[in-house]
Amino acid sequence: MLVVEHDEDTMYSADHIIDIGPLAGVRGGNVVAQGTVEDIKACAESITGQYLSGKKSIPVPEQRRQSDGKWIEVVGATENNLKNITVRFPLGLFTAITGVSGSGKSTLINEILYKGLAQKVYGSRAKPGSHKTPAGRGLYR
Image 1 (cartoon, rainbow, N blue to C red):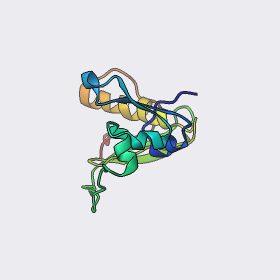
Image 2 (cartoon, rainbow, N blue to C red):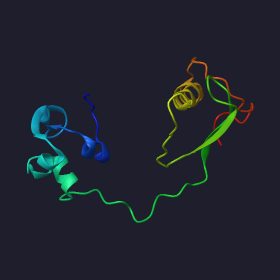
Image 3 (tube, rainbow, N blue to C red):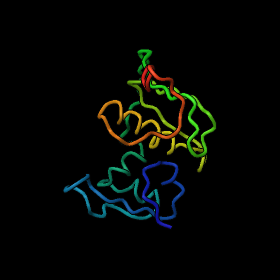
């Protein structure tokens, strides 16, 4: 099986890694290293190997950004597999939507949130999936 992945745990589980780079776009497209995770870590030219070995790192901020109290709210979403759910998306924060396959993540984001915002912001004619956000309140809070 071939997987394109950037997740560290997945790379450590792989039998064989092909590291393509050295950078993105026109500066990429070459095989920089291949082999086990240890082979990748031992290759000085591999940026992936530098991160896996700890030579390079991305520091985690000591303090996380706080919400300013504004959000986008979807009330009573019932499209496809969604069971009358109400959800608030905080503005200005990185938010992840997770769940098992078929739980309604794509429906919530692509069919309700995106289409609702596209209507409101851009005047799109795409109709959002079924939800009960009250008239007057719209999709925003």
